[in-house]
Image (tube, rainbow, N blue to C red; front, top):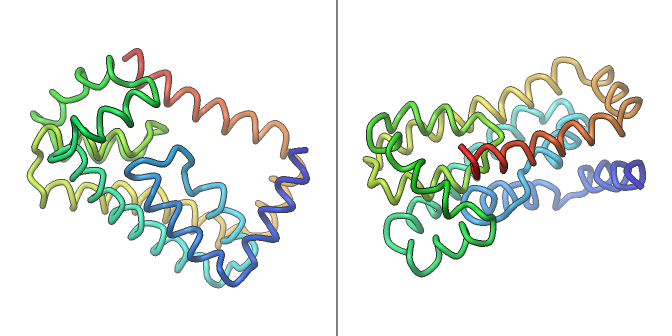
Length: 192
């Protein structure tokens, strides 16, 4: 099943509308959507290595723009929308403990949490609730998301076929490892 899904994603990565889908997923993940863009970014960068840099930049920009929506949800629509998003993901209890670091060390909290498996939508909403200076939020978001997505793109560009072959050879264990990292991010956010 995982092999069929992988093959399907690789085919989708080569379609003309793949870039739009990547941007939409990257935008949505930063404010409300549960799936990160990496499962699409990696095959796209591997299937067309000459465009890996473009994919990384557009993924970063889309994520930062989506983060603005997440910030606004936290800043102005927390009771109406933000609380529902947190409830849907089971983060209400742990969320309030996250606010203090955002108030005290906004730049570092956003940058460091933006690099972890913690869902970025939680970071953007928390930034809005904490009333983080918007310029600080933007700079930290560009840095964190840029480091994350450009690192993935550069690795795919540089290593290309060996990475693709490695992924294809160890698809099952890699899938489980990524799944465990995502679950770990949710668990860390919920209980720490």
